[in-house]
Amino acid sequence: MKLQQLLSFTRKAVDTYQMIQPGDKIAIGISGGKDSLTLLYALHGLKRFYPNPFEIEAITVDLGFDGFETAPIADLCAELNVTYTVVKTDIGKIIFEERKEKNPCSLCAKMRKGSLNEVAKAHGCNKIAYGHHRDDLVETMLMSLMFEGRFYCYSPVTYLDRMDLTVIRPLLFVYEADVIGFKNKYNLPVSKNPCPADGNTKREYMKDLLKQLNTEHPGVMDKMFHAIINGNISSWPKVDKVLADKLNNI
Ligand SMILES: Nc1ncnc2c1ncn2[C@@H]1O[C@H](COP(=O)(O)OP(=O)(O)OP(=O)(O)O)[C@@H](O)[C@H]1O
Image 1: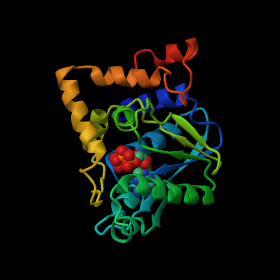
Image 2: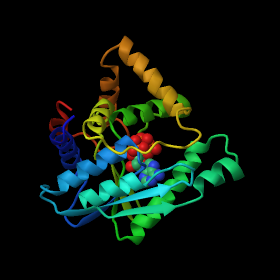
Image 3: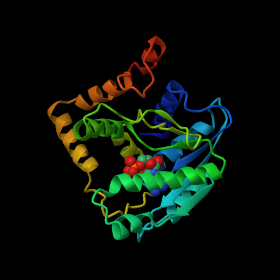
Image 4: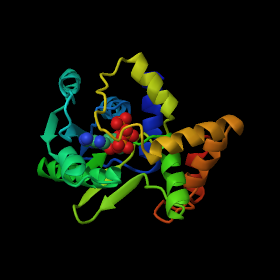
């Protein structure tokens, strides 16, 4: 995928769900993975021509695992002229050494989001952007369905009233395959995730299952994605005629 296509997908999502208002200051959560680095390019590019003026900065919560490199991300941010902050934490140690959590991912995500929100707020940001893409949404929906018995997926825009922060997901129309193509084309400096649970989670299981389903029944993931965006989930915007037109051909 070329930058122009990335920007077109991003603008469509941002417009459709009115993710950005004039004067917004958006903290981009950077894990160092392909998705959040692609998001950095997407919002940096959009900022140059989007009619609503907004600011961005990049924040990484360092979970404290050995071997996690932030220097390449810092270099990229310097190149793009984006302020970059690394928040040092002991989250990895607390979860794997002190608490020896059996299900580490949910507590880790909770603590990581807490740190990110706090720093974003302290920097005067009113929004946080996550790099969730189209495949992430389908995986999340299916995980909720299979393991929690409910039809759910996080929404494109979520207001966190306790923090007075709004979470946005500008890549939700982008396929993961396109993110991978973008990463390769632009040589994104992806930092390998040193988490011991990486590659061995329910999400990985769901990824493999969906891959198999989509091979056996081509188009199945697109159908699931449309079930999500077509307004059948209570926290999502209801689809009226105007939104239905915008969602055509996504
Ligand atoms: N350590 C972190 N610091 C800051 N933001 C983070 C961190 N980890 C995740 N995020 C943000 O949360 C989003 C979703 O997290 P998740 O763990 O699902 O990442 P992911 O789908 O593997 O994405 P990526 O490829 O960017 O790692 C990421 O895209 C990123 O925006």
